[in-house]
Image 1 (cartoon, helix red, strand yellow):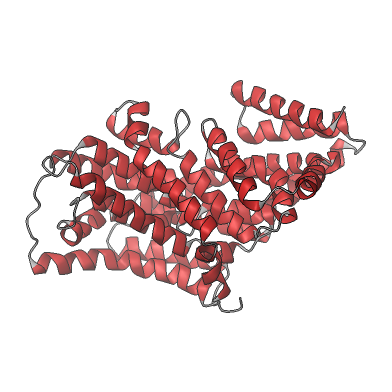
Image 2 (cartoon, one colour):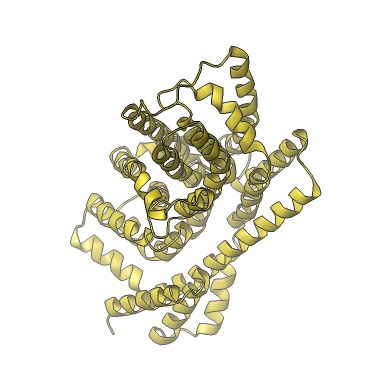
Length: 433
């Protein structure tokens, strides 16, 4: 059988297993095992054992459970409520009013939680009831939250960045720093979009009174602890004081200290946050293990090498490749979650990326933005599911509300292609490069 036939058969088998409801990690493992057994001469037993170990034992992965735990601690605290109260006087007078709280709060929580769905859930459970109670149009309230919640993957620390860094052998610390400028720019674009959409519905928006100066200072005081925690984590990485794993430990310590200072720390919070971190990390670990086996099988079949050679010889430009790949990722986003998209494609795509001269660091940021797009595309858009659970709104109606923010994500891809320095400049200025 030709390499193309083998590839198509393995892809069909994978989607069959996923359609039958098999866990993503197990489906990847079974497809990899089938590929080794049927299309290579390599003994499956020892090779699978080696792949399972190497794919889950890397030192960079140690940052994953720590950052997940940090997010779980803050998710279970009352920090989101106080942050909403603090941002209200700071943003009330902007065009669009308190709709900007969805964006700014999501950006801040993205920098301490690392997950898009968790960011959406944490922010939405406090902002949506209040925005709807005050009379803000539902399409703007729900759409802005769905879009802004995607910042949980781009603004570091990011679970998807850790997974990509481990699989692509790219420094997780440099990936984190590479996401800072695109993440901040995307948040600003979201705020501009909110203001633009609000202008056409300005008669429907409630008029927020000018807050007293004392409330503004109290708002700054509520935001300050989150900013300090962000600076501790990202600042330590940027200055070369800590690796990504060490910064994760700093983040956990800071999150625990924050709950203690706020009087929220108790045995229940510690227990639930630990269990939540174990569940999430185990799920991601299973996916990585399955991806390791599939990557090994792909390597033995020679499909990635053949694809990279074909692309290099055919003269496909990087721009045309990115355009085609974006369409592929949009379609995959209809059916798979973000982490599954990364682990499913990276073993095949990365050799091509290197063959046509794209920077794997830059490509990681591009990939994260495409994964963000998948978070708000039905029928498997996790941010849409979160908002549906919070409001009971129809999934496809929420997706329709999110359309302007999908456009912003695609605009961000265009900007990243046109100005690659958005992702690569800041990592070059890091201490130690």
